[in-house]
Image (cartoon, rainbow over all chains, first blue to last red; front, side, top):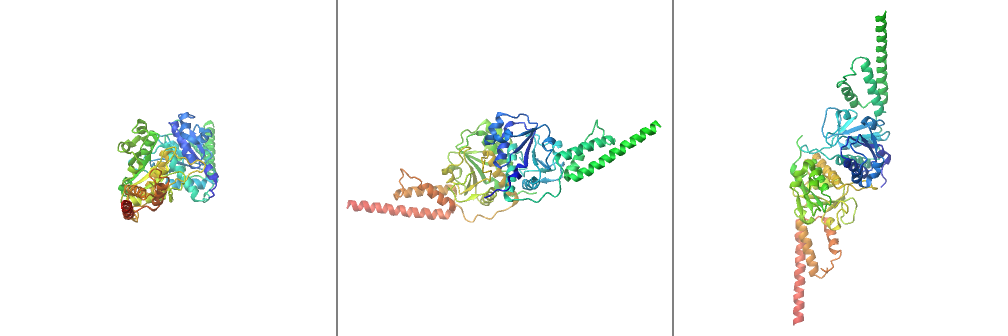
Length: 256
Length: 256
């Protein structure tokens, strides 16, 4: 039996944010390797590297050795075109809630052209709203409604298992419908948006409140294309120029 | 959403044989409970009960409290009509190798009428040939051929996840084709077979070699019905009586 293209699996990264127990990092690495995934990213882990992580990784310490440790989730997702957050609970923060097979098909489709990510939150608190706002979709493992608390590495195992089954089941996936913006491009857009809104005095930089979070939710649902980001940023620039001109005129008027 | 009949999941037990690390027992209990399974059987565990098992079980310590500890695998399977062994490697010991979804459908079909089991071996050595000979089929999790070593609790999680997905996907399963013999009935048949073969001097009780194991493999493949066990045992009894009569005649002849 010839296996499908291994590059697809190499483009699917697992991102663990704010992991408390190093043993879970090792166990997650082992779970990934059994399913042929290799790209492990850690965001602000409590303890890493660590001997407990090595012990739990068993034969997957090579993944730990090449793990990328990032300060922020945005950094871990900077070059990705699709990030799916894994969460036990439905939340209103993103529109789409995918099953593991649906998520796997989506990830493999995008992995043909760019890196994609499965994002797992802290063992106790899960993904924060801020972290979810960086994801374009939510994956939920259908579980016992009376006790849905999978161990972190167990959740990684189930998702990586489904990714592998989808990968084994089909040699190719439909091309992504659009040229999706990368996480980095989208983050630059949000930064631009925040600056522009402050300049427009629509947002108070001293107390931005939930405005930016709400705007992130809105755009996260749509999965922005590169072209759309360029258009939106063009509009922002035009608004900024208008405001600057208005200020100049206003100043001029005051001074006149 | 109304869920399918919970009795089906209550009829599917997880049997862990010769588990070395009590933490894995607790983690397996947690994995089971997240998927709605509750019947955990332990065969000759190294250490149980244990505080590490409780810690890893997290919110599933209720499963540990009602866990059945058995001396032998045959005891754990005595009332089951179907036992599937989970193994990373293909072996020649049983004919059928099922994928996790295939195994789940099979287990749920039989669970309508009797207890069934998923059997997991020791962390390092897996299931022994003797243990596999008590199973009617083998389940293999499709994994990375270069590193297929799933953690025990991770394998339990994947299988229980697939059982739950199959359970959620369909409210009912076809009735089992036949009135399957229970594990206990089949074991009694094997004991009868061994006794009869010894009496027939076909088998040397001092060195049975691989004969009984080969016969077990043969019958394990077929999944014996209750009626078939009765027929086979009737044949054995007839053979035993014939041999006894022959011996009597022989003795009589010598004595005459």
